[in-house]
Image (cartoon, rainbow over all chains, first blue to last red):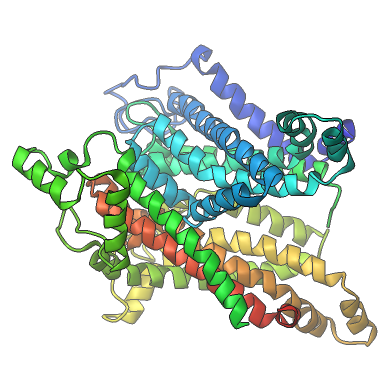
Length: 276
Length: 315
């Protein structure tokens, strides 16, 4: 079944294109320290706001910093923010969803009402409020985004557990006297994993946009460290003098986000037997 | 029907209580003493002591919450630390601006998203469908603040067609107001159009396979009548529910859009409050947004039942 899903995924051209985009940006982020580029904070006062040229392929910014170098290092911040915040959301959200779905009753009622309450505040507004109260930094932005994305994983996992817990193999595990913890970890979690993986991939895309939005507002990555969102924040002040400053970070965010969205859609089609 | 409304309302109340606990506890997440932060740069011990007394900060946390929630229920969300204006008045001033932006964005989103979704479903598997899907996915993947910046660059800086920023109240000069809001509404509307398109397509595909659609075709009805009268009418229900959920997306999108186009609305209020460390305003905005979202969901659920005869009968 798993290899059939993988074959289906690899036969889907748009999912493959998404995977290629994601792998490209991951490679760029990992290789940043060894690429032959200037440091992202190195300033050249003789090359302020220079258009793309042979010396600076993507041009320079208002402090004469090489935009290619800042883009490459910015990829680290954006990808890390996307992956770490989704990791937080999954690690916190999935256990709550498992417990709510498996035990039901008042535990489910309490967890579900808390999730309803968190979902009633728009994702970005919740993240802005959390980032504002925690203080502006990339780490706090990741925590804020992770906690804001968490309720979706609780709800998704709970729904999946409700569907799985009446299956014969779970009843069987219960009949042979296995404890709740082992049933949840060995029999239920592996069977609800596929939709969580799909949701996690799609949420990385949302989290990358959220990090860029928070950094754009000044609540994420702090200067002089680069992130695509904070680069756009600076760029908006120089739109008529140096439009290239705004062009590259936006294109990069678009490409990496569409990459994760295509990959997520492809994974959903490959793992879901029902298709329209 | 009344029993259903009462049941839905009863579910909304605990959600509202939990939201209020969450908004209250935001203050507790703040590093440092809230009274010291509220006292400003001088940090006069007498001012700090007065603020502690005023906001019951010396009381146990549950009592602090009861005091805060009691005031919030009476419509008192505190004063802005910056301007000393009641938070609710500030929100009341800014909300009409954001509502105008949201309504214009919604009109644009419906005008693009629904026809695109219908065409994409009807022409499933054709090049039109692939292009529409790719455009929709791109709409979801473009950060709307970047789209805003690019449009300012193109439409305002290079072409000079529309103003890059500013706001004119609708009551003062309606045409000028619509002109200044057009670009921000387009930026906000395109992301929603993408979501609407995907849902309309999916709902239409589900209905297109129904027996009654096949019967309508077999009766010799024109394709236009089959699509619009028999298919779209039945596919519209999930879109109604979705519209309420999009309200939250609209408010979140408005935060960034208003920031880029310097529109003095609800979204700019929360961002300015964050930078001025005006915590009562941040709390007030989050609370009002959540209440608005809960109410929209409540009305959407009721509308869903009103519009769906099968649901009405099952009540």
